Amino acid sequence: MWAEMKPLMKDRLFPAKSATTKEGNPSPPNLFQMTTGYWISQAIYVAAKLGIADLLKDEPQSCVALATATGADAASLFRLMRALASVGVFSHVGTDCFALSSLAESLQTEVRGSLRAIVITLGEIHYQACGNLLHSVQTGSPAFNHVYGASLFDYLLQHVDAADAFNQGMANVASMLAYAVLMAYDFAGISSIVDIGGGQGELLETIVQFNPDIEGTVFDTASTIQRARRRRSDNAWDGRCSYVTGDFFTSVPPGADAYLLCGVIHDWDDSRAVKILRNCRRAMTTNSRVLLVDMIVPDAASGSFSKLLDLNMLVMNGGRERTLAEFRALLDAADYKLTRIVTTMAPQSVIEAVAS
Image 1 (tube, rainbow, N blue to C red):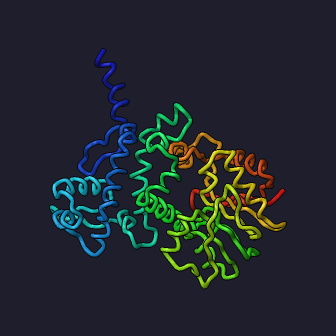
Image 2: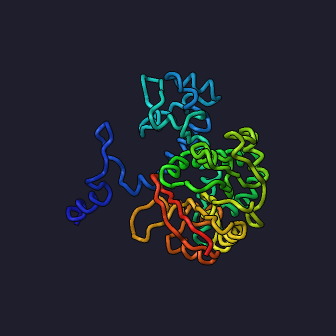
Image 3: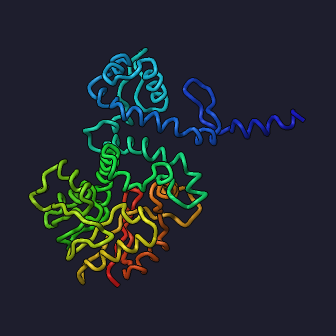
C-alpha cells in the first residue's frame, strides 16, 4: 500500500515544478508558499518602518550599525535582513553586512517611485483588518470596522499617524499611476479638471504639469487638504492647481470640463458610488466628462490582481472592484453614457463617460 501511495504523496507534497533554492534544496509546496506569504510582507513592512533602505542609500552597512541607528536588537535585525536578502529584498554582502538591492531601492523615502509609505500602511492597518477576512466573508461587512471599532475613514480622522501613513501611501500609488494615465489618455480639449477625492494632489499636479492649458482643483476632505497644503504651497505649478475642501456625498465644485475619480468609486458600495457620480453629474456642464481611473475585473476565470484587490476592498471599507458590466450599471444608474475605455500600462483603465 505504501509503495503505491509514495509517488502520489511525493507529487502532492513536493511537486516536480517547485522552484529550487540557490543551495539546491527544493522549495516548499506552492500552496504552502502562498499561505506563508505574509511572512515576507511583514518582514518588508518592518524594514520599511525602521527606514533601513534610507540608511543603506550610500553604502553597505553592518547589522550592528543598522541596529544602533534604528534602536533594534542586532541579532534579530540580522535575521530579518538575512531573510529579506534570501528573497531579493536587500543584498547580503560579507558576513554581517547588507546593501540595497534593486527591489529595496523603492523602500527609500525620497526617491521617485517610493513605496515606503504604502508598505507601512499595508503592514499596519491593512494587515490587521485582513487578518479578520473570515469576518467579512461570513457577514459581508468590513473587517476593519470589526477590528478597530470604526469605519476606515472615521478611524483615520481620529488617528493622525495612521492617516499620515495612509495618505502618503495613496500618494505613492498616485505618483506611479500618473504617468500611466498621461501616456494613455489624451487630455486635449480639456481646460479644467476637478480631481474628486484627489488626496495630496500627485495625480492632478502631474497632469497639469504636462498640460499647460489645464487648470486643476484637488477636492477632498478638510483634513486631507490640510496635509496636502503642508506638503507644498497652495499655488503649485504656477497657480494652476488649487485645493478645495468638501464632501463628495453632498456636492462637488461645478463647471469643470472633466471630473476625475481615481481609486474613488472602488472604495464604496453601489448606492454610495452612484451618489458620488450623481453629484458629479449635477456639477457638469453640457460638454463635461467624467473619468474613472480604476481596475476592471475580467469576466474570464483568469488570474488578475483586481480579484485580490477586491478582497482588500471588502475587508477595509466595504468597497469593491467591478467588471465592465458592473461599471455600465453604475453609470446608467447615475445618468451617464459610457463613451470609451482607455487601457493604460498600469492595471487601471480610464473609463470615460458623459451625461446621458
